Image 1 (cartoon, rainbow, N blue to C red):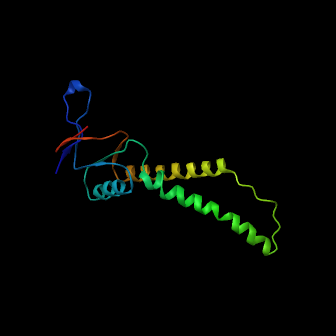
Image 2 (tube, rainbow, N blue to C red):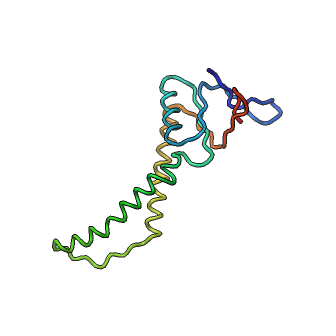
Image 3 (cartoon, rainbow, N blue to C red):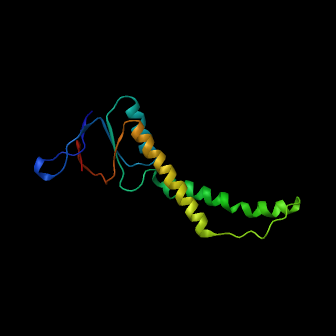
Amino acid sequence: MSTSAAKASATSGEAEFDVDLFVIGGGSGGIRAARVASGHGAKVMLAEEYRLGGTCVIRGCVPKKLFVYASRFSDTFDEAAEFGWRLSVPRFDWPSLVAAKDREITRLEGLYGTGQEGAGVEVVRSRAVLEDAHTVR
């Protein structure tokens, strides 16, 4: 089934595209659906208004896992002393952890974008709204 990504007159400044699948949202589900459909020969566009990766990568699972991982070092430092390691007093630096988390999220977002491009998916960096059964604005 074909869907017009934007159905408009030439004077409106909008473009008209004909695609097999238009995915709204670049989270894990949207990324996978777009890549798989494109891999089967479909012409695919994906719209994401914020960052590729969705809630899990940007705000949830990944940041949480990085913070949990970082929190475990304190115990490791204590245990190391019991096995002969002499360390100066470790200091925790919150801004450094946040910067490391941000770098990892940016890296993952880049991988998602590269993967979509490599699969032939056209990524539209904009909000998408269904206007009718065949039109996305």
